Each structure stands twice: as C-alpha cells, then as structure tokens.
Length: 277
Ligand SMILES: Nc1ncnc2c1ncn2[C@@H]1O[C@H](COP(=O)(O)OP(=O)(O)OP(=O)(O)O)[C@@H](O)[C@H]1O
Ligand SMILES: [Mg+2]
Image (cartoon, rainbow, N blue to C red):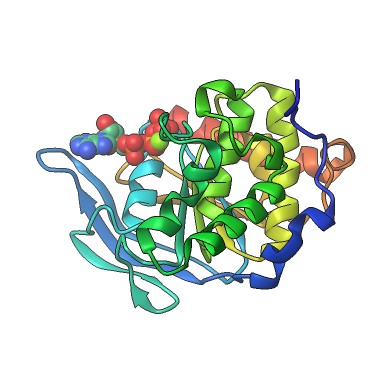
C-alpha cells in the first residue's frame, strides 16, 4: 500500500499552512427556540456558548437534537426565535468562519483527492489556480495524505476518506469547526489515531470546535468541556469541564484516574436522562 495511514503526524507537515493560523471564533446560541414543522418543540430558550479555541463535545441520546443544533449553528436552519452569533455576527451558511465535517465523508466521487480538497477554494474563486493547488497540498500534507492526492475516493479506506473530509474543511481556514460524529463509522484503531491527530491539529491551528459524538471516552479525551443535551425539549441537561492535562495521548490519558472519574460521571448522567425519558 502506498498510502497507509501514518501513526502520527510530525509538526513539519504543518508546512506553510501553519503560517495561516486561523485562530478560533467565539459562538453564542442565545435563547433559541426551534420546532420542525408539524413536530413537537425541539429547543426552548436554548443557550450555549464557547470561547475562541475551545473544544466542546456534545453528547446526548439519539434524537435529542444534536445534529439539529449543529445545523442551527451553521445557519442551515433558522431559529424560530433567539439569536445565534459567531464572533458577534448573526450566523449565515455562507460565513467563511465555518467548517463542517459530517459522519460520512461526502466526497465527490468524480474528483480526485486534491480536487475534492480544492473544491471550496475554487468555488470561492479568490485564489489563482496555482495557489489553490499549493494550499490544498499543504493541508493534505497536514492530514498525512500528500501521497494520495491523485487518487479517487473509491481508492481510499474509510479513515483516509474521513481525513480528506477534514482537509476539505481545514483548507478554508475555518475558525469554527462543526463536526457531526465524524469518526463514528471507523474502526477503533483508526478512530484513536484520528482523535490524537485532530487534537494536534487543533492545538496548532487554534480553531474552536463543536464535536458531536455518542462515545463518552472520545468526548472526554478530546474536549475542554462536555455539554450534555437532554431529551427534547429539555435543552441542555448539564456541562462538565474536562480538567485533564494537555497534550493528551490516548494510552496515557486513558490510564488517568481522573479520566475514569469523568467518563463515569457522564455515563451516570446519560443513564439518568434515558431513565427519565
Ligand atoms: N428535517 C427534519 N424535519 C422534521 N424532523 C426532523 C428533521 N430532522 C430531524 N428531525 C427530528 O428531530 C429530532 C432530532 O433529530 P437530530 O437529527 O437532531 O437528533 P440527533 O441528536 O442528532 O440524533 P442522533 O444521535 O441519532 O444523530 C428527531 O426526532 C428527528 O426525527
Ligand atoms: Mg445526529
């Protein structure tokens, strides 16, 4: 195999891209009400915010509205009332500050890896072709996929496809990265590798991240803060600050007593939410 997933990324792979360090945006969901047409209310007076560069993980039972909240935050869904802002500005889907990574990579099958990553830059039309290419290559190098630039999505493993999806989001230098169970479909080893690499990238690039997951250990390993959503329309059930030291490495961090305490606390809270439903 000529493009195996590396076990780690070296800092020099950040190359030119780290010079464009985008930094993080603050977001604020302020008193938001939201109901899908013909359905019961989903959110009532929902309030949630994050400071620049913060990594927030969102946990909650299936159907409680995590993806809906992400779609509100990305401006795809308008709130019925209340306000959602990114760095103080009301959010719109066109906001350049936003990047998305979904559960399935959603790559264009007819484009090679480089052109998939370049796609957003082409649409924005702000950079000459050669610069688009250089930037896409820099970010592919960042996620360890330089060697796969000429391959097509069907020639890649699931983990590699998800890296391309991450590269496609990062190339636009988002200041807020919205991730909806991005690694849920991957095997445990690939997932662990990508978790560590995501933390390394975020540490260097400094984006704010809202990361949805069903996996309590993944949430605790990645996040500065875990937000638990209750059953709709309960809104936010509780929050938990993750006071584990950084940098984090999966094997070492998982062995910490505090890691177990935090995951147990969250598991108990989720059980309580489900039991009360
Ligand atoms: N476009 C839509 N129109 C109407 N109802 C919807 C729509 N999208 C989602 N829903 C409903 O809203 C609720 C919340 O859905 P959402 O996808 O936000 O949940 P979730 O917490 O992300 O669940 P999961 O963990 O399974 O991904 C569900 O009951 C779902 O059926
Ligand atoms: Mg969802």
